[in-house]
Length: 350
Image (cartoon, rainbow, N blue to C red; front, side):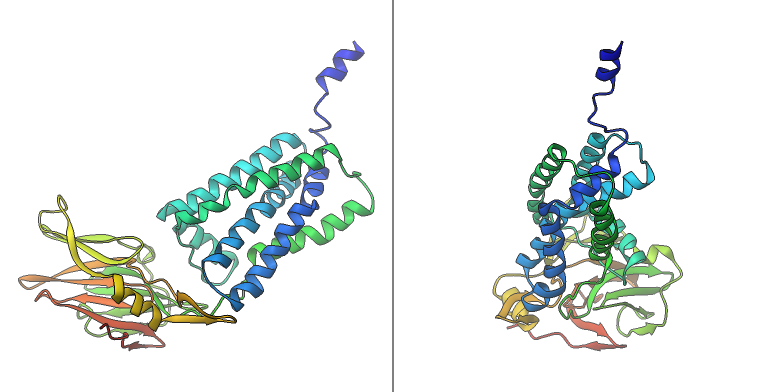
């Protein structure tokens, strides 16, 4: 009967060594390198030279260090979970969660709300190009396999060092405010609240709120977040009768429909040379010169359509370029960016 007992228990100590294996995984050079990269990139590199490269570096670093961190946290709650299942679950959860946040607007919204609970008011944006970081999980999996072949002692100084040093540092790295470059105000939320329109502007370290009671002609600052929870939801499409409008994700563009949304055509857009000039006007500079990136996202986030008299007014939140307004006469006007209680005029377009 002894061999049978051995065969039934051949799980490499999985049911008893989850925490030990998770800690060993977090202490592997690959995991430590990911943690070091995350700290250096978020707190130094992004400030020196902000742009798409440093943004992707943070994603890669997260793929290397987050699964081991997640495994340690789960093992602390469920100590008898099989170690192999713990590793597979941590890798799968990281991949699925990252894809959900970066590939869907709803996932990005949930992540923004969750992140704001443990950090300053934050905005996480969906960007499918960030999914290029997912292959880094293969390297993270390789690190797990290496620790499985050479398990660390379950007791003693090694485990104390891992638990006392690496875990707190990893938790701090994933939640601490990064040394992000100075951002300009970004109009990201618009919501109709009775006879008023509420505007949400994402600044460098806080969210400013403003309200308009005259269809966007004038705005007044709100001292606190709107009471209505729906004010936090960005409306990408709205209608006045059969006249509908929608923002196009990823650019400064608004489409319209005269048949209730059956067919669509471009109603307003900034692209090509005009977009290049606008980007240059808002351009941030890094340690090594211009980055080619604006101090905020130049894209249409949300809109509201309001019926007035025999026509309608459209208000659009255009990120760094501020507020866009279509009057009842059909004229589109860029109103500017809301900052510190005033509207700053937008840069002129050639």
